[in-house]
Structures are given as structure tokens and as C-alpha cells.
Image (cartoon, rainbow over all chains, first blue to last red):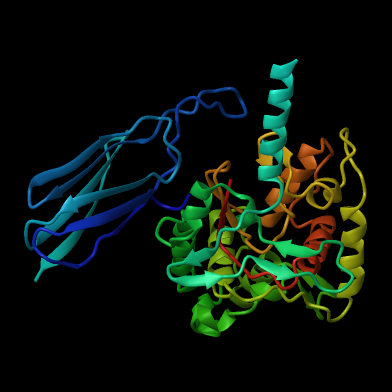
Length: 108
Length: 277
């Protein structure tokens, strides 16, 4: 795949207390650690092991991801918006890299 | 005995429920795309159906939202490459072609006759021709992420346009050659393309719901591959499934089949980049 790249879809405007749907997708090979290359060597595991979303410092969702999840993992969840703020996303890779993305939600 | 009969009846019901395409409608972000077309005169099939109609609801749903469509990751990479200068010329695709939307309709006429080459070229071959002649850069490998990103991006510009096979130059000869291969049995299983995709389209081949083998959605994101892939990669898989020796991507045989498939799917809408099982 091309470089690991997160994508998120969040409504930019919402009313207070409204329930919104958040969609996220990250391009990632999700190498399970179960496969072998042509020489018979095990291809080391490299997956996104945790996904978390926080709204203004408060955790909204945390997902522990296992090797059975396919490439380019997609997560969708609903959340109630308390007010204007920033929704921060973080995907943690097995190699320690954390891919992040922010989205601002405006409450009218 | 009674039990066995009951089981048989249940099997018959299951089989008939699966025969043929479903009745779902493909709507991508509010825009409907027709997934069937009347077959042109003299066509071996009565009605043409996109492969989308043979997939499960879950797989279908992935294609109905551009955000959920995992192939869009490749399209985004294609956009990045479109504006990136390369090679000795230092030119990007955009420098000559402008916005990629200028290429709307191109995917629908692929493979297209090249007067200079005296043969049809597929989208991949046209791209590499342009890279070598105009950018003076290294051509891309057939199944590279660069090539798939670019073919997906250019193909997307024609989404919703009907497949309109190129009939210019010597195309007819290539289509005829493709047709010959399509009906030739091969491999240990002695299958022709037509065995599955014409005589048995709509039926189950073990767990796989056989489609008409239409090419209107390529390049496609295939869940089995966990990646986007080209039509030629899919065709190689088909040939391997018949336990025959596959041709290489970009070979004359596969280009001929691609040319013939375009005539078999004439009138169906382009769905690039589609999502399949």
C-alpha cells in the first residue's frame, strides 16, 4: 500500500446533545504475523493494535484490534456531542508509531 | 427417507434463491448507477448485469459510500501522483492534461486503438506510454500501487458512463481473438471463460456466486486481496482456477480478452473503483 494514511468523516456542524456518526478508515496492511514469505520465513506481525478517539481530553471510544482484522481497518461509531470542541483520533501501530488526526466540531 | 426429501427440498429452495442477480439498487452517495443493461443485438446473454448484483449486501454496501470504499485510498494516492513532476522532463500529468476530470470517458472506451503502436493499448499501457514518451521517466509495474492508484483515479472520472467499446482501427480483429480464447476450454478442469460466466452465471460455484464476469468495475478492491487490483490480475486468477497456466499481465492474450470483454459489457455503467468479494 501507499503510505499509512488516516481518513475520518465527521459532520463539521452539530447541535448540542445531538448524536452524530463518525466514520474512520486508515490505510494499513495489517500483517497478521501468520504468513510466510517465499523463503518460508515468518513475516513479522505489524498491525494497528489500538484505536482511540477523544473529545476535548475525554475518551469517547477505545478499541483493541486483533490480527484477524483485515487491511485498511474501518471503524464507525455514534457519539453525543456536548458542545464545540475537537475530536482527536489515534491509531497505534505495533512498531510504536501513533497516527493521529483531528476534527473540529462546531455546535451552533 | 422423509428427512432426506425434506433436505432436498430445502436445497432446491436455497439454489433457486441464489440463481441470478439480486434486485438491489446501486446508489453511491445519492447518485444512482444502473447495474443492468439490455444486451446488444447478437449478444449471447439476454441481459447484462454488473458483478455488483451478485455480491452480498455487506460487500455491496462498501461500494455505496465513497468513504467506506477502501479503493478510495488508492484514488487519493493517484491524485497525489497526478500533480507530481517526474522524469527528465520534470513534468507532471497535470502539466499536460490539466485537471484529471478532462479524462472523463476514457475508461469507457478502453482498451483503445493506438495508431502509432498498431494495436490496442489498455489504460495501464497508455499511462506507461505517456510516462516514457512525455515524462521521460521509468514506467510503472502493472500491479504497482502507483499504477493502480492512477488507473483507479482516471477510471473514476468515467463512473456512471456506459461501456462503449472502441471499434476503430484493427479492434475487431483483437475482439475476435479474445472471443476465441473466451470460448476455448483450458486447464485440468477443462473450463472456458464461458463455462462459468455464460452457461452458469448466477449459480453457485461452491461458496462463490458466479457473475457474468463483466469488466466494468475494474480496477476493483477485492476483499480477498485486501487491496485494489487490475483486471489482468483477476483474469490470471480465473485461469489459475481452471488449473491452466495463466498469461502474464499485459500479454497480448489478456489484452485481447479485455477487448472482447468490453464488447460483452457494452452498455453497462463504469463502476471504477468497485468493491468485490
